[in-house]
Length: 173
Image 1 (cartoon, rainbow, N blue to C red):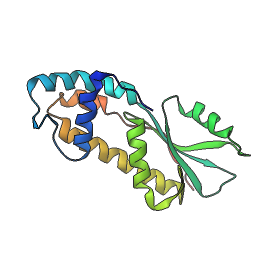
Image 2: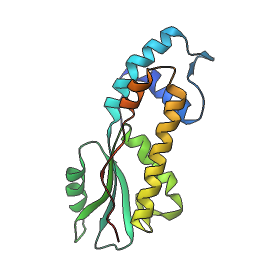
Image 3: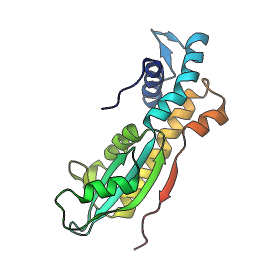
C-alpha cells in the first residue's frame, strides 16, 4: 500500500479529477491561487512517491501468457523475485516503461488489456499486441493529465514530471 504525505493529498485529488476529465477544483470551487501553488509544489512530490516501471513479462513455462505488472524497485529485481515463486523457468521482461505513476498506470494497463485477462496479473494473447495497448494507455493518461493540469504548472515542467520512457521493447516475432 502506498503511504502518502499530507502534502500529496491535493496532487492525488487533482490527478484523480484530471483522469476523470475534470479540471482540478477543491471544496466545490475552482482551483484558486493558494491551491494552485500548493498543487504546483505537491505534484513533483507525488511523482517522486509513485514513479517506477510498468512491465510485460513472459515465462517459457506458460507460452502465450504474459504478466503485466509494476515495480518501484527495478525490472531486474522484480524479475528475480517473480522467478523465485514456484516456476521452473525464469520470468523475462518483454516490454517495460519508466513511468510517473507505477500503481495508477498498472491499473490502467490492466483495464486496457481486460479482454485478454486470465487471472490475477496474467493475460493471454500476442505479447506485442498487449505491449502496444499498454503504450497507448500510458500516452492517453499522460495526455489527459497534461490537458487538465496544464493551468497548474508551466507546460515544460509538467512534461518533465509526466515522463514515460520505453526502456525495453517487445521482441519481434
